[in-house]
Length: 141
Image 1 (tube, rainbow, N blue to C red):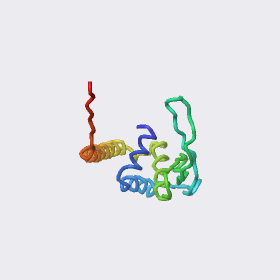
Image 2 (cartoon, rainbow, N blue to C red):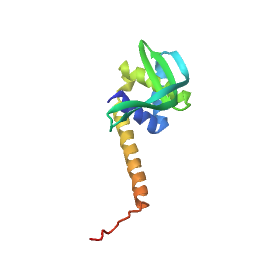
Image 3 (cartoon, rainbow, N blue to C red):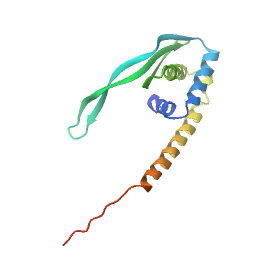
Image 4 (cartoon, rainbow, N blue to C red):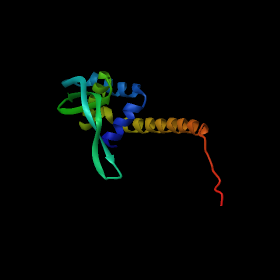
């Protein structure tokens, strides 16, 4: 599982999963905060598909944290002001990069949460589709 996919699941999914994963690592390993969670402004890059070029849309506030679990560094970044989530993401990132034994069952739990998120989005889109108005015109010809 890619880091991007994993982070998306942990951010969009049930926050209890993120908290449990992080707490499990923190209870068994030494965590050193390299950079405590704090706000950062970052530029958002967008691809203009018509011109096939990149441009900067603007800045967004994110919370960033960097920790070390044993000898492995982890990074956590989340949009908005959420220090706890940024730290949890950093701890989880370091634990997975270090391939700690506590992470062995995380993949299946993340996949299950991803499926739950998809099902929720499908239901949400179905409700939106019920209210969609379709206009049809007849060409005179």
